[in-house]
Amino acid sequence: MQTLEKTEPKLVQLKTLLTEINDIESAAALLYWDQATYMPPEGTAARGRQLATLTQIAHAKFTDPQIGQLLEDLRPYEQSLAYDSDEASLIRITRHDYERAVNIPSSFTAKFSQHTAECYEVWAKARAANDFAAVAPYLEKTLELSRELANFFPGYEHIADPLIADADYGMTVKSVRSLFTQLRQELVPIVEAIASQPVADASCLHQHFPEAEQLDFSLKVIEQLGYDFQRGRQDKTLHPFMIKFSTGDVRITTRVRENDLNEGLFSTVHETGHALYEQGVSRNYEATPLAGGTSAGVHESQSRLWENMVGRSRPFWKFFYPQLQETFPQQLGNVDVETFYRAINKVERSLIRTDADEVTYNLHVLIRFDLELQLLEGKLAVRDLPAAWNERYKSDLGITPPNDSSGVLQDVHWYGGAIGGAFQGYTLGNLMSAQLFAAAAQVHPEIPQQIASGNFTTLHDWLKQNLYQHGRKYTAAELIQRVTGSPLQIEPFISYIKQKFGELYGI
Image (cartoon, rainbow, N blue to C red):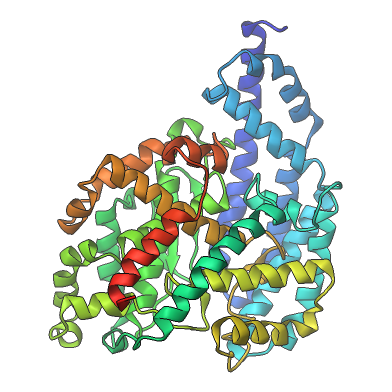
């Protein structure tokens, strides 16, 4: 066994190499952010090439045998340390990433990056023009590349398993289907019961709300939640996202509709949830594989916790509603807080996933999850996707999209990344958000009262201490068990839904 003195220099060497790779990846991320915010349309071709170049360089550097040898040399050192020590965790997580990355050729990484950059731009135009046919050939290529990507990892039970593992390590089609089946059985009767009641009046949200005032109010809200503007900023984009270049630069984007107060406000709070997570990661992990969220599901748990369990709660609006009325006196001056609260929690069968309420949202995710599995399995052709999409919406939600822009073209995921592995995290995040919030409230039962007075410090600090600071040190399963004392389960989410919406709709 190597001595501590011999292994420590190798750990320093590993960190130095990882920092260099991280810097290249961050430069690529900055180019992507620019493409999604301010880049002129004619820059598309060059941007795709630039992203492909940086992605290929970073991948080649990370898969260099030198990294593998360092990890092997550090194995005895890792085994001599506690499992959850920073050093052992860094070696363990880096090894996991390395073993995955070496299976993917750098040439494929570059090819895939360039294709998705091109596909994104075609999708953006196709969505605006309601022209699925324009992007269909690109989507067929994405499907081909997604299957190729999965096949770099032989031995899977289902072709989507390697793609799911990339976003939610430890989850498989089998385990996700098990949770989703339980969830569907519980949700469908609740949705049907609510649908039998009168729909809440949300007309107060659909007046003219000038964009500038919406953005100003949203920025005040998220600063009070704890978003650090010394380490972040917000810009507009077509499809909102959060992106991190370092622990000192975590940015969010949003989109605003002047006839829908829901859109900008809750998109901003949603992306802020992601950003609070990244800003809360220990700075000791800077520029290493530990410096990020542990999985797509855990990340989504934070966007949904802050957007829904906090941002759509009565205590939240007890504090913020008078300020919102001051911002929009003509629109909301004569609307009482209870009417507003019911409006922002309106439940109805709708077309757009990102606009969906808490009760029906997961049905949108289940549809996408099933369709992408059928695509990967070869049971559904890309050309038939719009029809299959519309059929599922009619059968599951009782509505049919009037066009592809509000149907199969609405989400960026398949057009800006792989087909498979992206959507399950949204529902996993919903389940985790309820379980985590319940755990926080059990330790600090004063949290709802504090929220009602505009104080989010206790909740934010609890999340930083128990969740955020650890970055990727633990798997999602380890983290949920460690923080809540139980494995992931649907009961806290169903209990939350039944309590909140049972009271709202009298069911």
